Image 1 (spheres, rainbow, N blue to C red):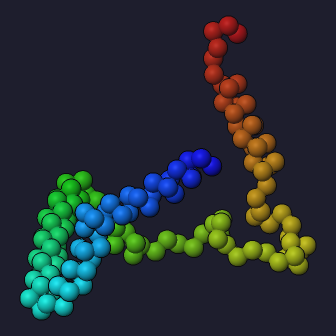
Image 2 (tube, rainbow, N blue to C red; image 1 turned 180 degrees about the vertical axis):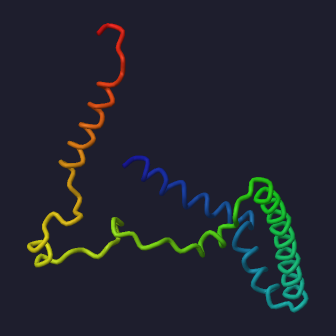
Image 3 (cartoon, rainbow, N blue to C red; image 1 turned 45 degrees about the vertical axis):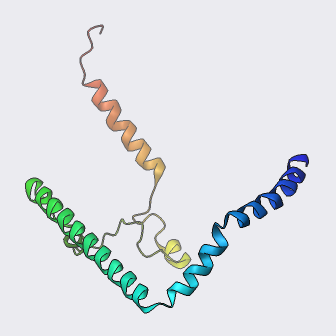
Amino acid sequence: MAAFIAKQMIGSKLDSVKELAGDKKEAEGEEKVSAEDPELIEQRREEEERRRNKYAKMEAEREKIRQGIRDKYNIKKQEENANIVLPDLDNSLNRQKKSPAQLQINPDDDDFNPIKMATDLFGSVKESIANIPFPWK
């Protein structure tokens, strides 16, 4: 609380000092007057155009370097990769969900069954371990 009161007391004093120095308020007033000057408007437009040309040139150089890397490592451009259409997979997460009526008719038809998957995995691991020759057997 004391810090807040101290900031309030000192803050108003600092604003008056800034006004005496003529930092912000005079500069803002001059920008408004000078913004109407057609020569300055044209100069700003030209600077903006030069800046855009500079960054377009830099981006073209970067793209040239990227293309060299793509050619060196035989990588397709991302836009080319985006056009590849993947086949529609039935096991996809985005597949059509079954209605309750379809679930009653075929409850185990190609559904995710974690218990069956775990049992199968455990059986395959058990078989592979049985085939490994251990020196202490």
